[in-house]
Image (cartoon, rainbow over all chains, first blue to last red):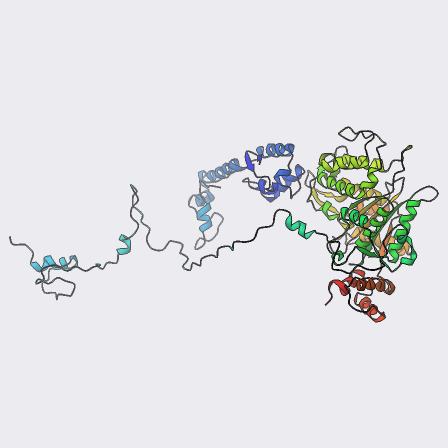
Length: 119
Length: 498
């Protein structure tokens, strides 16, 4: 088991997959992150050297990911609502924000467009 | 006591209670004044029964909003139960088991007939022009060495025959003579051959490379082989930057350690007989002065961190000319599927740019020797084979090979093949071929009818071709094999026999 940013990953897990398990890191960021520390795309967590692990952890802790990123997202939406913007209102009403029709198929908007968004 | 209501009104169900009329006709459900007991309907009719039947209020919770009717967004009416996954009753393959099965090399078939009078490849037979068109068996120890350097491929039909054997074609005879010439040396000096084997699909490039390695082993050379260049460049093995290199080079530790392990297994007898003669300040660990080269290779094979310095030390030793020690043997560098190292690799540098394959340290080592920038004082050869089945487009290399061939055929410079304006030019690849010249491009030709006859006779003697080998059969098989493409000949006569 290897700790990356306080999370314990099994040794057989791909590094790429482990990095992408953090909120805010997708394929692009994980590829660039791995290239920076010279980790090949098919590397497993067990293959990482201790220096690579500390480097990755240091890099991840300087990035806006996980709760910080979620908070930023919520703050952005709250700012829209507080200034009385149309987009803020639509978020508050759980309705589509970008001009979509609302006659049918707004379940995604109902689920996601909130002030206190989960993600 | 007299009631304010009449008897009838008391006995009626609530529905009728509010109706004052005493003259309504009595129905079956209403009570008769003559019955001693009132009969009430079992289920009183009401349209709001589902409402009442709605879920009971939660403990302490309010029931201000009771769910009624279908959900707002509709409901799926058809529910098909998903099939549960079939549980495997057999044992699942262990990690690595499937890959091992895929890569398994079988080199002997006990059911095949042992070919009587089969000559074996030896330093004498390999250069003997009498054996042109004959099939020669590869001796057992050499088979083990070839297996160690992974010269046999799964796509070749070794598993059908009693013993791995190869056809002595004109090209293999030429190559054997060149190997023998390098070993003997000219005027006390050995040369360093640079050859590229190319040709159509199934024309025998990899087998000629195998023959070259077999000849090198027979002549006591050290063989270092990259069995498939693709493994180095598709970014499936670890890499790390090498210090103090400009442009930045990258070393693949895990691959290097495996390469050293293969080299050690294949060249154990030769390396055991050689000792260190130089100082190696680059090695992170101290070395004994009387250490054998086999032990040095073993150091690198066991510890991936030492692999690259150990390889460099080994190379320095192999290219040294010690004064009071046995002379170093010639070295053969072999690489198959060359096109993969003549382009960008799939690795990325720290700035996310693709790394050129020539910036990978081991590839760079091979390419420097191929271009002639580096050479071995005690002689040897670098033999590279291209592949026609799993190969990326490398326009620069293809053009360079065509130009070298045209020059060798005596084409004047102005009539040489020219680069296409629409294809990108890889300057680094261009340099390899343009820098010094002297690369021998060997395009494998089709086998002649005489060579095909020798091969078919071997198939028949092995019991795999059940027909009399005569002129008409040879002509038929030869023509069906595209006029002598040796892989097709094998397929038509043996592997896909109907």
